Image (cartoon, rainbow, N blue to C red):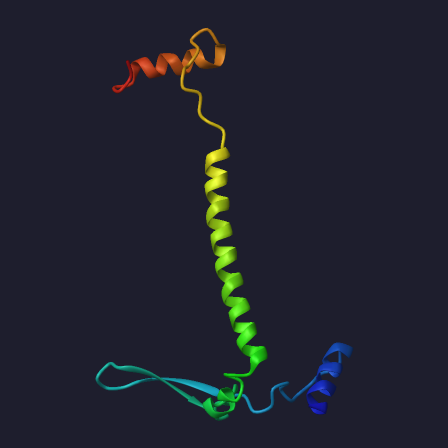
Length: 123
């Protein structure tokens, strides 16, 4: 970790660095076989497993803190979901309505009234 930190400091100070920050970088090779099947071969570091195993995770399954936390997150999810649903209904309900009657005496609506009468569906 100290080497990676030192390398990062050297990069920031402008000195040239010859070693990669992550150490041994994996290589990727694209291979085309005789039967026209493409494949990818990745060599280098072995994949690093992260996270808990099932046995390690089961220690926390019945812990009162985590049970309460799971139920709280579950309840908050649905509260927010229904809040957004009702909020969208409120936005739709409170939106301005379109004018139902075009006033032919208004200068802006005179053209709209003429186009409405010329359209195939107009009266």
